[in-house]
Image (cartoon, rainbow, N blue to C red; front, side):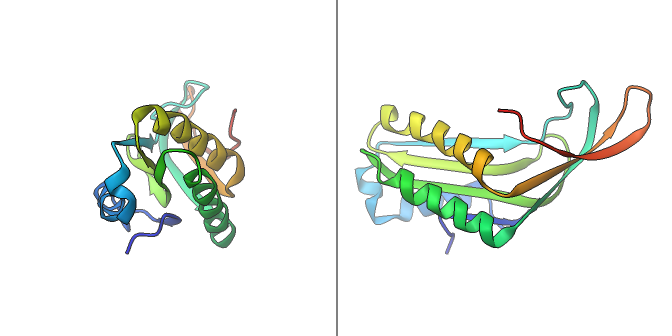
Length: 150
């Protein structure tokens, strides 16, 4: 069974898995909307450098605790039936999915604000770390840990 929130290795969960989990929930009968956020690896960073790959790591136990807490908190919101956050770990190429956030609820006006809040909260609170491997403008290879910009 798919957990409501977790960090997991790339390939262990799919978008269809989490949609299926939402639809199998006993509360799905109350839902009239599912909103999704799919975070993908950008092929170019904010400096205009070409991203060759991204490596994602986490303090897994704490990250799972934080993601679960976020989902439980947001699921208490009016009209919300399901909140899931699944962050993938491993090495990723440009364009690959790296995070899925799903919010189900009674109406579209319930789910969109909660979806945005879920994304902002996990980015701010979960101990998940990104290392960019890039080609500089001079053609040199480099890598560094990325600090999130809010």
